[in-house]
Image 1 (cartoon, helix red, strand yellow):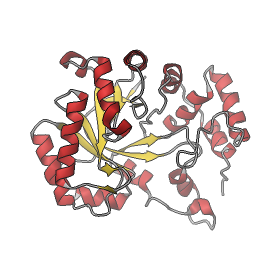
Image 2: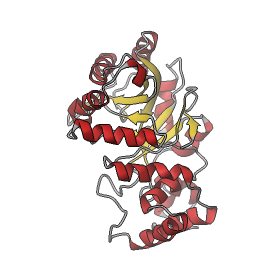
Image 3: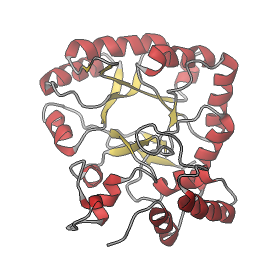
Image 4: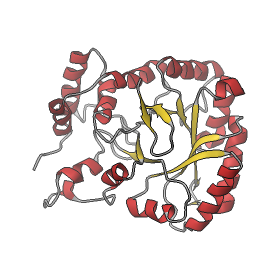
Length: 306
């Protein structure tokens, strides 16, 4: 595992983050094995959210690892807030403060390394967000801040009121969901792939040193399922299988390696709770695809080159 800089935060973090969305119903022993597998492979950056498992994912994590100051200093914890499930998005000062205090209690920690705003809130007031961030930072409760699923103008609007740089933007990205890459390749074309759906967020983040954290990199559509070994996607699986054989890894590893090959220096987030599959994801840090191999996967996924 190698490290990258997380935006302008000054943090040097593993290039693959460990997602904890689905751990809420796991036993303590299974979560501990899951965490140990991550740490054994050099991955000590754990991604949470206050809504994962209705809050249970955070508390289950803390209980399983028996959170204590010595262990806490060995890991990075990122969590997210802002979604009120099924009702609204809420970036109000009160909601951010309440959510962070709840996460700190569930995670049994005094501070978060990173807090992300979870999706955009149409009613956001940047000054309120800034007041919450300033208070949390001054109190030592949150060290760095970022966003998820936001476009360049939404980030600029927030940044205008913030005293600290946004360090990360968590966005859906993977081999079978790559509109931000497709639009960059199909500039000035009359095809569907040329449509700029995100305001050029990929280039914006690169220009402003904001780390993109791809979520659900093995999914297609919006949580429609995994594309690996899926009969709906024979061509891309065939190409990935050949590359997996060449590098002595699995197709899961190749899927993550495809993201890591991009020069944006992204930090993809894993989604599995299976320790063996997690190890496959983390192994991607040891594989560097050639330019031709990267494009062969892109084309096999159904994309075209203009």
